[in-house]
Length: 199
Image (cartoon, rainbow, N blue to C red; front, side, top):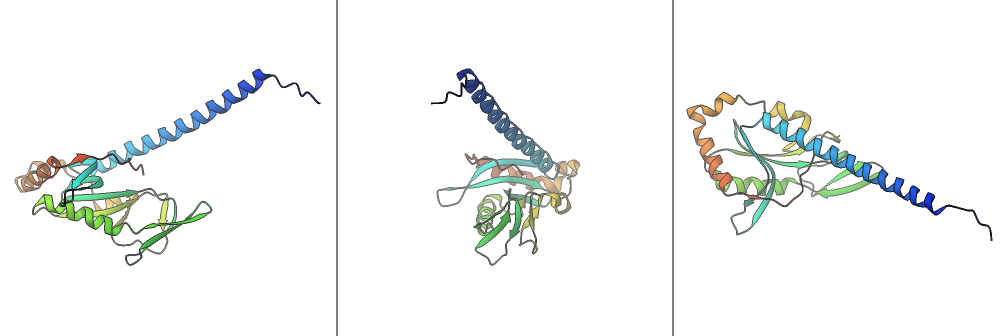
């Protein structure tokens, strides 16, 4: 029998190097997610007077609906459902499934529009006469090659559709009903256990 003479200490050292490499990789990935999260929150903060993130909203039937982000903008309340989908995305208003091609694989996910409509309805029920809008906010790692379905917004375009707010407007008398509605809405929210989607 041939004895290759591998020192057990070398095996232990190699295992330690692999372990440290894996820890460094996952640590770097966690840092990237955290940095993307901070950047997203900072960006959303520029287009909103007030914001809450990762919350549960009463659905009117004794349950709750998860919402990624709720923003108070000059136009009213904005419901944002965020998605990080890498690759080419094919979706449409009448399609039950949207398809993604990327990284050598193909997969589908449910059309997110109906769920967004449910979220908007739940927020409207608590917001009184203040306008409520909703958007499906996709990260820039994906691309809709055949045109964007209704209510889809890419991260690069958020300041185009929702410009940076004028903070002075918040103290104007005409904005008081929006602030009152926002206070009523926020008082009925709960923290959500869902993971934060870092775009």
